[in-house]
Image (cartoon, rainbow, N blue to C red; front, side, top):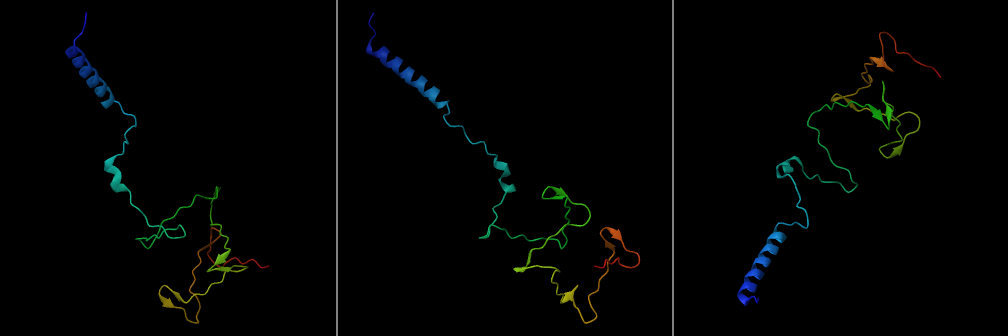
Length: 132
């Protein structure tokens, strides 16, 4: 039995429509599923030439609780090893030059110091001094 040109045309149109439906519902590349509501939680931060960033503290006090440095736990006094201050190497004692304290100039009377503890031990009378 011979099929006529009309039947072939209708079957071709149906076949093309089916192929288009399959292609339309198939994704070759998955869509990005970005959550549009979280964009306001992030901001760009300008980076200096050396890779650092400038930080402005709102409060005059910053609560810091160090638990470890370089994988070692920190107990009591903080271990500090200064190699350089203001571009100059530090050998021996730390160079300190006070010009003012609490907004007041320091006169020849000396620096007002109130030491309450040494190496985590409270001081009630004299400061323990170790002579070398």
